[in-house]
Amino acid sequence: MAENTYLIRGAAILGGDSEDLLIRDGIIAGRGKDLRDDDATVIDAAGLVALPGMVDVHTHLREPGREDAETVETGTRAAALGGFTAVHAMANSNPVADTAGVVEQVHSLGRASGWVDVRPVGAVTVGLAGEQLAELGAMADSRAQVRMFSDDGICVHDPVLMRRALEYVKAFDGVVAQHAQEPRLTAGAQMNEGAVSAVLGLAGWPAVAEESIIARDVLLAQHVGSRLHVCHVSTAGSVEIIRWAKARGINVTAEVTPHHLILTDELVRSYDPVYKVNPPLRTNHDVQALREGLADGTIDVVGTDHAPHPSEHKECEWAQAAMGMTGLETALSVVQETMIETGLMTWADFARVTSFSPATIGRLADQGRPLESGEPANVILVDPAARWTVDPHKMATMGRNSPFKGKELPGSVVATFFKGHPTVLNGQLNTPYRYTDDATPAAGAVSGT
Image (cartoon, rainbow, N blue to C red; front, side, top):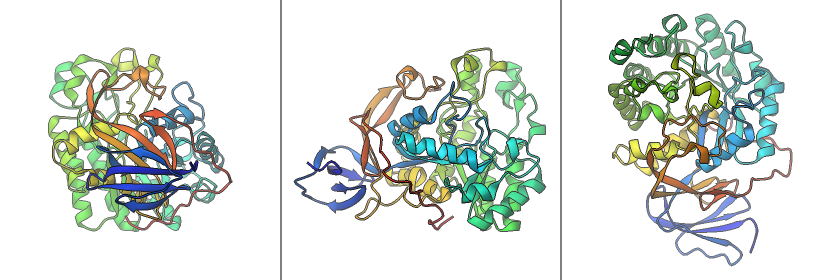
């Protein structure tokens, strides 16, 4: 049998008709009925759904500097198990990814690991301090070919600086991904501002803190003619603002996290810090608006905002606990439960919001491609009928802060093919892809948003 040839038999392509996929030397060499290749390793995919590899626009891999929380190796193992073939690594590492040197380090660590394509996100400002633009051009020209820039975790709240960033990235078709949070409206905030915060006596985080920044930034993007991406949208009002902006032709995209599609601030009544996250869990009204916004295309993509923390930073009193949840290994299942099993979306829609659109936003030329002959073989096989119970201690991520601990979820990733190589088989890690040259993945070759 040829080492790099695989024949996937009888998979439902994007949830549609059952067909075969032939993978050879990293490329989809054929698609159709009753394909044959005597040298191929045959994979029986009856009952499975074949999808393009998922692309996460929002992952925290923590390395360099926070290897006590996660490493590129452990985070990308988790990503592969979750069905991802590419992740964007956020800049809030230590040192911050605000120079060509740091983003190239992250890029190199990703290639050395070989589980998924790791695309560094560059910081917008030096040290995430919000005072001076970082080396945007140098990061764009580096081996990492950065196209997405974000101070995620901190809002670029100075409108002049935000305008300059939006203008600057136009030169290389970049995008600024904004963490929408007006800091003066959220000083000391611990959870969503509303009925539950009033009862619990916790300082509230008002929806307007997010919505006011989004409103400002879509107008700035319109003014300078640049691309804007809004991270982790969490309120019904934000959905309406983005819908309004798109109707005006403003070049804005947005993401929603899996946890904001299903969890509400009612869970905070337990005072369990696993539910402490930025932006905070909102109300059921917000959850329903987010689902509708994702279904109708107002929200473009699902981004995990995978944020692992050491146990001691989460297993403490609420006020002192770090904000964030893990998400790479549960994202597919949560979206299946909230969007597909509710009838709001199909598997083809799932591919749009988890693969096609994220790859376009990040300008990843070899990701988010159709499952057709001649295309890169970044493919996953999903068992939609599977049920599994979340056990954070059995996950590949170092973070144990999953809000779905003990919850039964639908759907499981059976296989992940990255560049035609099976990184995951039978639901278990197989072996990583090994790069054989120093070629840098193409960026900037995708047209679209």
